Length: 265
Image (cartoon, rainbow, N blue to C red; front, side, top):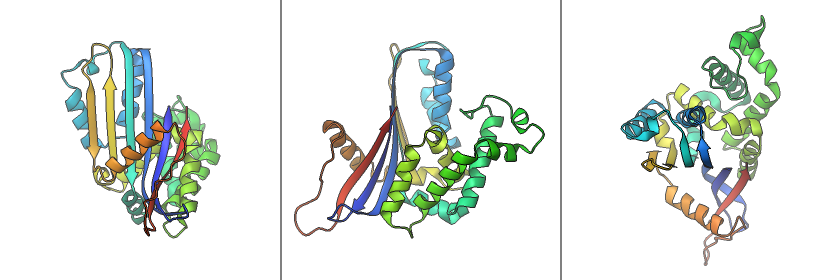
C-alpha cells in the first residue's frame, strides 16, 4: 500500500496557508519473496538514497542475512520518506521552478534509468527505443503526456507565489498519477543530486525491515524536522480509520495543523 501525506499550516477556516512537508509511505508484506524480487525491492529503496545514505545502509546490513541471496519469508517493509518545504525552495533556486527545466530533467532521468536498466516502465535498451532518433527525443515522444503533466504539476507545487491550496492540489494530483507513483520520489533525489543540494538537510527517510530468521532492521537518514508531528498526525489518522480530524487549538490562535491523504495500491 502506498500513501501520500501533505502536512501544512492552515487558517481557522481550514484553508492552507503554508507547507510544512510532504510525505510518502510504503507498507508491504509478502509471505514468500523470491531472491530476484528482493533484489528489485532493495534497488527501489537505494534509488531513494544518495551515495552517503546508501553506504550507511550497506554498512548496517553487512554481516546480516539481509545481504544473502535467498528467499525471504513473512517479509514486512515499512518505508516513510518526506521532503521539507526547504527542498522546494532549493530546487527552485537551482533552476527547477518552471516547466521547461523540469521537463528536460525528467526526460534525462528516464533516459538514465533506461541505460542503467532501472526504469520500471521499459525493459529494452535506449538504442532500441530510439530507432534511429536521438534517445532523448525518443524518450520524450514515448512518454510525452506523463512528462508534461508531471512537469506542469511540479512547477505549480514549487511556486510559492501561487496560493497554497493550488500548490496542495498539484501535489495530490501527482500522487494520484500512476506514472509519478512509479518514478516520482527517485526523481526528487535525482534533481537534488544533480543540483548538488544536500539531500540529508531537506529530506528524511525511515526504513524498517523484518522477516523470519532475519535480524530486524531500523534505518533512518536525514534531518528529522517535523517528523514527530508528522508521525503523530499519521497515527491519529490511522486510529480514526482515515476519517478527517479537526485539530484546531482553543483560543484565538489563527493557525491549525491539517493533513490531506491519498491512498492507493
